[in-house]
Image (cartoon, rainbow, N blue to C red; front, side, top):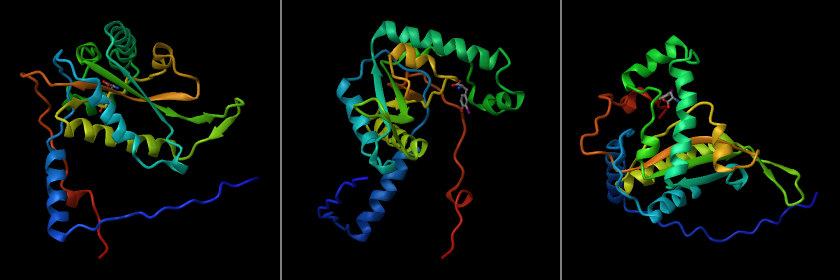
Length: 225
Ligand code: IYR
């Protein structure tokens, strides 16, 4: 098979002074540590441009063979958000009340206070559905293999979350399960599967979050120096 030629250009990497490296790292982590998953949003509108920027951050991420196996669907339309809420709640009701979740899983979720009702799916000004492209489709309709799809889309979603937070907005990594209903409502093709549904907006002034923390870096890392 014919291979594409390698074309290169200079990287133009600019090293930073040591103090600036540290300062930037500390600022970045300190800011990220203030991020919380939010489930209560105001109706205040968020300009489309902010959502576009967050998608730009996600789309900058590395991906297997640079396939960028993702697609973002941004919804501010009221009736569509209502349809998504209704379908998500039907699935979540089965999960929480219909016996789909194991007792162990429900116990693990108890400290988060989640339940089947998802009013945030209508209250947030935007819902951004991220789809993973399990395979690509060529012009002639044949399948194109994508690589490391979950890793690629997971990284893209992480960058999306970081960008949303950095802009002073809030979101939630919502995963109604199963999410197949999103293909129908959002008219996405069979080679795409919903990965995460992000409500995006401003937290309500009385918004509370679970009083939970993060492990220490020392607990989640091992070093060979
Ligand atoms: N998908 C459900 C349940 C849920 C599961 C996990 I793991 C969470 O960290 C939070 C929720 C929901 O969205 O409520």
